[in-house]
Length: 123
Image: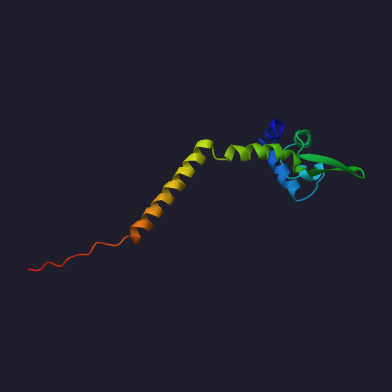
């Protein structure tokens, strides 16, 4: 998970992933999208490959890179767990629900009770 998070930390690598989301691409085609040197693009692709976010495939004499999102599973699970409500938040939510139910029951009981008659003053 750490290597995936490190790979995603760089804006150029994130943009490479966006490019590959549209389909496979050669290193040359990927490099055309950036002002950095080809060796720099190669280093970024190596980091992404080592993190498991992309894989390279031979197509004749060319090498093409393909997006591989399976490496995100562990990071996604961590983020989902992090966003989940804490034990105390769940308890407070349950308490709020119970308070709402109790108020609703009291209103229903009060609405069904006979109302006291108002007497007219006879003077």
